[in-house]
Amino acid sequence: MAVTFDYKVRDQSGQLIEGKLEGDSLPLVVGRLREMGYLPIAVTPAKGDGLKTEIVIPGITDRIKDEEIALFTRQFATMVESGLSISRSLGVLLGQMKNKYFAEKISQVRSDVESGAPLSQSLAKFPKQFDTLYIAMIRAGEVGGSIDQVLKSLAQQLERSVVLRRKIKSAMTYPIIVVSVIGIIVLAMMLLIVPVFKNLFKSLGGKLPAPTQALITISNTLASWRLLLVIAIVVIGVVAFKQWLKTPSGRLTWDKFKLKPPIFGPLAHKAALSRFSSTLSSLLSAGVPVMEALDIVSEGSGNAALSEAVQQIKAAVREGQPFAAPMRLNPFFPALVVQMVEVGEQTGALDEMLQRLAIMYNDEVEQTADNLATILEPILIVLMGAVVGGIVICLYLPMFDYIKLVH
Image 1 (tube, rainbow, N blue to C red):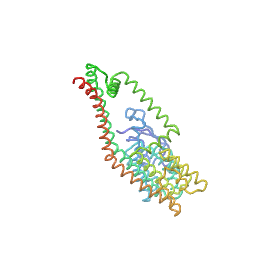
Image 2: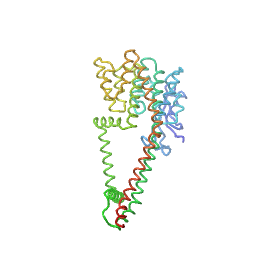
Image 3: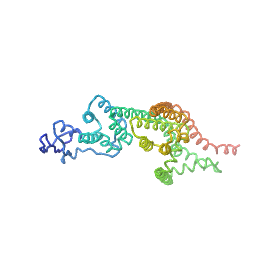
Image 4: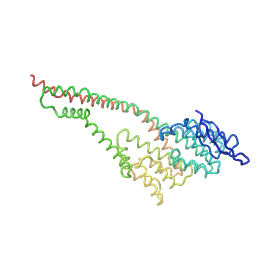
């Protein structure tokens, strides 16, 4: 739906002009004014057009997906590599963006670039969309005159991350559905079936086995006001856990724990190693200084255990030691990683070796993600059978005592 905007612009002679213009979004109106040869000074929605203003829910309606950032970076790299200027490339991309909130940010980036600001400085105004790694590599590309190559490298890394995240999310869909079904079945049995047996046992009298009594107690809790107390305890526990995760020691302990469970532990470990290798390789190949690169890797690692390990590497490198020395003492890095890093340092091709490691671990994570549903299916079936079967056994345990009394 078109919205009316009030604008103030200057023409080529510098004269101030005011007026109104309709458009689907603010960036499109600004772009149209520029195409008309005007320099926009102020563009705002018209006061009488408030009913047409969309409701914006922060984090939901104005969300910019990782896929959109990856696509933007890929198209940006292609245009710059083709010889288009950064400003013109941004203008072309701006005209085809469907996400108007992303378009608004890119429009501001373009305005800053046209005003003489570096691209890295303009992008740094939006840290949620363009993280420290992104800005550091763009800055290195500006210094080295290889902005097109840096954008291509960033696009590849973002695309791999998007594909991997999508595969893991898809693989987790089946387990989540199965666990939800188990929960619904258990809840239905507790609220509908267990009370029937409870009344039966009450009419027959006698002492119930401990498992049966525990099951009835749970059923009574779910069907009474005490359920609210249980929910309150769970909510308090979740809030306390989240607060604990915000502490450095809590985050470190939890991130180390995530690497230990079977199936998911190795998956998280390999994903962290892939991210470490890919990020460090991209930064070093772009010409980012080693110390700055290690800081960026530590900050964007996504795992406190890896961040701690990277800081240890940084401390050792500052003292003149090679990368491989502190890595060999840290259990986070497998022997293969240490050996390949050592060879990369000796041959002067550390960034290349790290890139090979990144590709290898990324492939392993993708393969594990593809097979995750197959691996978890028998485990989930056994879990469902154990839960439902356990409830049934608890309900029928008293029957054996009653049968003995009859005989």
